[in-house]
Image 1: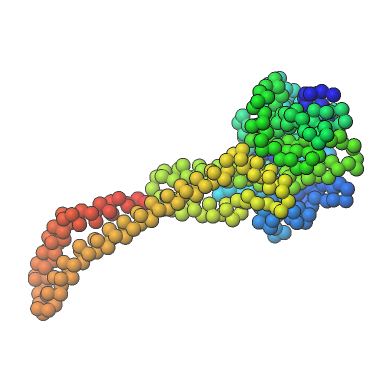
Image 2 (image 1 turned 135 degrees about the vertical axis):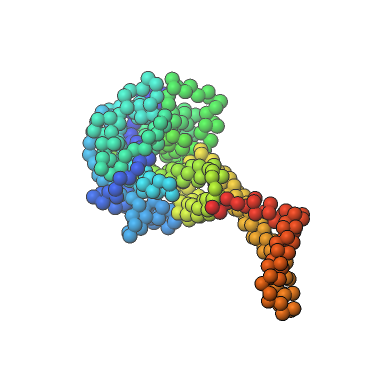
Length: 419
């Protein structure tokens, strides 16, 4: 027994990596839908998952038979502490990046502690070499299908699952009470850090784990910015245990909730970038119209805060939202886009009013002069030219009045917004 999760090798240890990629081509040789993991007679195929989610969320996560969004490929490869079971690709196109997608790599961790592997995946100082090397390199696994997006200092999003044995009392409930060390283990697994990376103060731990999801008395989950973790709170008895079913959920519906959150974040990031450049160059009205179309498309396709009548998936998605302030950011986008639309409408109104003013200033003298000549029955070309000269002089004089100056200023103020 140890109070440090870094030295623990759990009964079950798994990690799924979520990696943003660019699709080169539709992986038609891969099977449609997510990986149908099985346990205890349960199979996580498209039909079973769509019965769990709302129809709108299901379309975003799986597409339709005519236009599938998700494909998978089973695999069986071992390299170092990682055992690869399969790969998935979820197509999540944006307006600027129609080839954008999320790749998922499903691993079991063998012959090593889960936190050690997570620290290496997170690039922590002093951790071992990156296990995503050699035959498990994402660019090699996805060759011909997709290429990973350059993440800079960021790393793949990790979804970790660990169940303890009977001796790991720091993670186990005792008389129904969950020890504080359980939440510290949970936070370390989700953050991919140990006490040498970030020695969290005990008084800070409650605020760091206040959004932990208590799925049941048997296990909890914690969602952070760069990783999520699921931790058991009673001993795992191995095959046939409830944790068979729990592991199935981690790799299916709970993973899908996080995938949807990541897709939402990517789209909100792009909408924010679009708003920041709305005044770059001429054509404001066109750019605002395009932005409103993109917002409407995002709302109808991806923006879901309610996934299912089953609570944990919703809570996981909301916990991810909280990490990135997604609802608040989207409200800001809507408010800012509405401000831009009102500005365009105001400019359009000014332009229309200016055009009507010009017609009035030009048309009134000209119409009056022609009417007078018509009444007099005068069709002498010389008189017509004299009348036109008078009209031009009167019009020029009218443009020097306060009303005329307002009309010209209105036209000048709207020039360029519809180019």
